[in-house]
Image 1 (cartoon, rainbow, N blue to C red):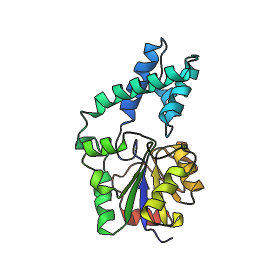
Image 2 (tube, rainbow, N blue to C red):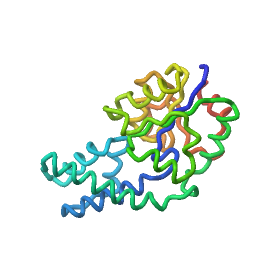
Image 3 (tube, rainbow, N blue to C red):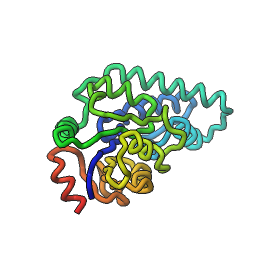
Length: 217
């Protein structure tokens, strides 16, 4: 495999914003008179904002019209952004910056492929925006993972063939999306939850590009 590009998910791969999403979604559920657990929150990995709301409403057995749902997604996002406003570089997950720096020295192209509509803001807050040539987020896609659109657009933006791209993902739906796009999928996190990945790393700690190449053999 001729690796020319790496495409990264954001939440749970680059930074741990998942905790902020969870707090905002739980606050929303509580405002509707039911609770939303961390275990239930696992269902939202890699899922768009509106789809996430639909999952939560189903959990709470709530039926709302489209106008109400649109208002709730805005409220949730406002609560989320209140927390993101205080993010700093120390919230980047361990090993990520070293790995991104190594990719630059090896002239490996980089893109972001995330369902988040706040990806640019998040990257700005943690001073990582300049590491990514192409950013495909929820403002640029019409289909959510496991549809491969987000990664296909990332590869197109870079001008790199899918078979020459590696995707780093922490969600099972993202792994399916990467493989459907014809890319090499590396899971970041729990191997049991990412069984369909070509390979899994627990994190970017003590990971370098040569180790990734060995995993792909």
